[in-house]
Length: 232
Image (cartoon, rainbow, N blue to C red):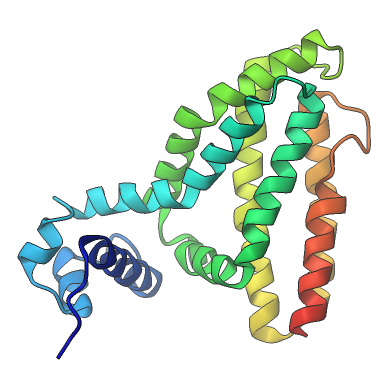
């Protein structure tokens, strides 16, 4: 006899099933009926939680980026921090969040974006970030300009570019890390560290920071090395 799932457990089952199908077939080629059949649930069971596949997609995006929003809000609320300290604290906290479930996160992101199959998901991810994270980053950039730390003539554009670069880099690096795990190839890890170095330079240039101001290489590169020692 199958255990009766709670509403939250059923919702999680639908999401995980959808993610697996999106990975195999792509978002556009996956139907609601595919999800229902694979999950072994009734149509009513699906539509109790989601009115459409698009609604399910929205939920997945919120899960993917929701923790980042929470961290950004918590860091921004730290009134005794400078803008640079806030920016680096955000990097540390996001990295810590990923490190807890790095293998699972790497696999998920790699599957979702493999071959650029799910452009609609990526677009919604950026839209959600633009709505919920960019406004907070704009405040931090203006704070940094007032403090004389950030040097940019385009504060709003810099904030938007910073967030887009950050999300893009997270996607690319997690794909590379998952590839390294699958192939057991340490050379890919060296590529990841080089990517972090380049990424830090891009972010510092975007915000008008001096070289070495951010902790991307130190924090994220360090995590990659620790994971490599644990997994290879």
